[in-house]
Length: 143
Image 1 (cartoon, rainbow, N blue to C red):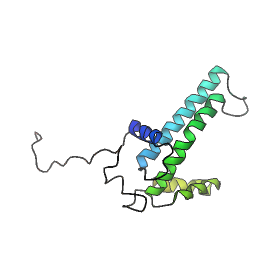
Image 2 (tube, rainbow, N blue to C red; image 1 turned 90 degrees about the vertical axis):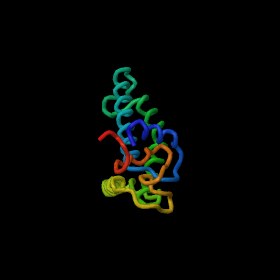
Image 3 (cartoon, rainbow, N blue to C red; image 1 turned 45 degrees about the vertical axis):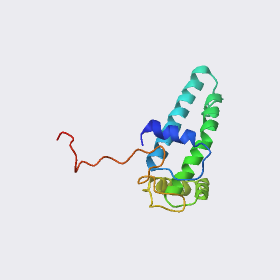
Image 4 (tube, helix red, strand yellow; image 1 turned 30 degrees about the vertical axis):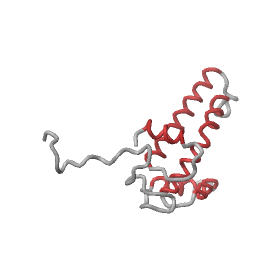
């Protein structure tokens, strides 16, 4: 899954907490969220809508964070489903450092085979995924 497909998928499934999300979908959306928040912070600084110099953030950054909260939560839960864990495990992130490390490790693990949350998105034709690569064993492709 490429960057734009992942962002489009996450934003279209912004409150879909069922199903599974591939690693690429999760991490591309995390990158997108980071870039949007960075851009919003820069715009806040340029326009002077930041709260104060002692803390980071401002009005536009707050609105951007709120807009991306539900899609980020949904893709995180779908990513946990892909590793065969309940979405409730997302709450372990409330534990400082240890919880964050566990979530990062789980978000980085490979997809599990078909499970209770659905078929493996790497091997099935789930909407938004690319078809499997072509096989070059039998056929004329000019080489």
